[in-house]
Structure formats: structure tokens, C-alpha cells
Image 1 (tube, rainbow, N blue to C red):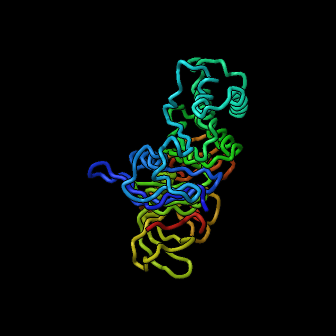
Image 2: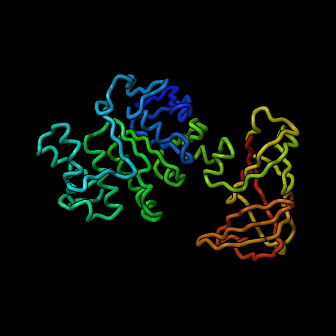
Image 3: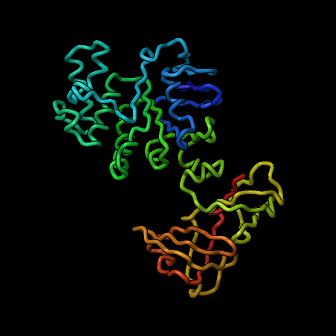
Length: 357
């Protein structure tokens, strides 16, 4: 039995449906990220799970028990908002211990738990500091410690790192996952940042327009996105319209850059002559100077139209046939030394090309 089960949950505000027949599960100790564009229903779904919004239909179960008649403050769930909502008149110790005081725990028990959590989040010795004396990252960790202090059965985080700058956010992503895993709490995290979802999640539920579009591990979503929206949201840029020429055996597809062999399954219901979207892995492409010798069988001829250095790799834009490819080439690879205007050979291994419906 999963720890959390959401069954066919729907919610509308007026005539506008915001969450539509959403179902998902979270196993005990699992970290699930709700990922999707702004306005897709992620935060509303979180509030429905917490009981802060009422369901129009469906059910939320925890440990197999319906939460419909359970008041939000009685569910034993923790919620960490993007704005943190720390109490400015309290010091760090007071903020972290607030939930436990509401549970009427003893002073000694609260002090031990606060010290334990501040140690866990890397803020040992910060108990007497005021909130305004802390950096953004420190306030974020205080808010996380406060959410964990009452030992919630389920922790829900709504854009927990959204207010931080990119460098700090990236450093805290790994810390947040490590802390949640050490505590062993089941958690649901809302984010629109795919890098954050990949860093934190055991499983990702991708939403759009109030619906679940795709769910699975980060690796599964990245290997086989279910739609163009999911692919582009995961940072994939080489998406070209094409026609399936051969569906059996090694599939063949024709698109703007030429005829390509396709790895993996052909979309269900698409036969020869059917329209598809061709997804090409920008890091799976091999680019070499056309001066380096014979063109391998199945390779394509191209011209470099733009080159941008990105630290450990170069991003190349290559005009191939009537289309354009973006290729990320590691600095140690032969393609890293090509220049704008150079003729190049482009090799697309089977694993670099997949199809979307």
C-alpha cells in the first residue's frame, strides 16, 4: 500500500477547471515532484492534498485511510511555502520549535529536537539568531527544519527554493534531498524548474492544464518524453516535424534534415506515411570536420552557422539539409575545434533519434 494515494481528484474555481481527474501515489520515504509550467494546477493539487482546499470529486488517502473528514491541522502533514512564512519576532530556535509547542511537547523534548534538526540542516549554534540576521539560504534551511520538527507523516514543499538565485538554489537542491532522505519522510514537492526536479525527485509527475501528462522516474521521462511539451520542458530543443517512411524493423523517418533511422518504438497507431515529431538528442550527435576523411554511411553533411563556448562543451548550430540542429560537443571531442562556416559531417547514432506522436 502506498503512503499517499490521490484518486481521480478534480477541482474547479467557478467555471474554470484547475485540477482534472488527477491520480498519483507516493511510496513511504519517496520524494515526488510535481513539475509543469506556471498555472498548470501543481500548487492547487498540493493544497487539495493538505486539505486547505476542498475536493470537487475524488479522494485523498494516507495509509489507506480517506482524509476527507480530517481537518488540515489533524492530518499530520507538513507544508513549506515559497515565502517561508518565518516569524520575524522569533529567533531560529523559536521558529523551529513552533510546531512542537503547538503539539504541547515538553520544553526539554523541544530543545533536543531543535538542536538535532539544526545540526541536520547545517545550522548548529544558530538557535539564538534572529531571522533578519540570516542569509537567504540559511532562512530556507530554517524553514525546512521547522517543517520537519513536528515529524510530519507527509511533507509538502511548494516551490521551496524558488526565491533563491540560481547558484544558491543549485547548491541547496542536493542538500534538501539528502536531508529528506536522512529523515525518511515521504514528500511532495512542487516546482517548475526541471533541474530542481531532477536533483530532488525519486519520481516526477508532469502536469499541464490540470492534467497529469506523464509520470515516472527522472530517467524514464528524459529517455522517453510523452509529448512535445514534456520534451521542451525538459530542455530538449531538437524537435522536428517528420513523416514515417518505414514502420517495420528499424524505422525510417523523413524530416527537414534528411532520412533518419529511428531507435525505439514507433508511436502507437502511426503507420507508414503518418506524421510524427522527431526528437534528436543534442549530446548524442557526433560532429566532425568534413576534411577528416570519408563520410560514414548514413552520415549527413552540414555547415556550422553558430558556435558558443559553454565551459566544458561547445554548443554548435548546424544547418543540415533544410533544417538546423543544436549539438552539444565536449571540448575534448573532435567537433570542438570547428568554426562558423566550416563544412562538417553529422552522425546520428540510433540511440540519438526517437519519435513523438
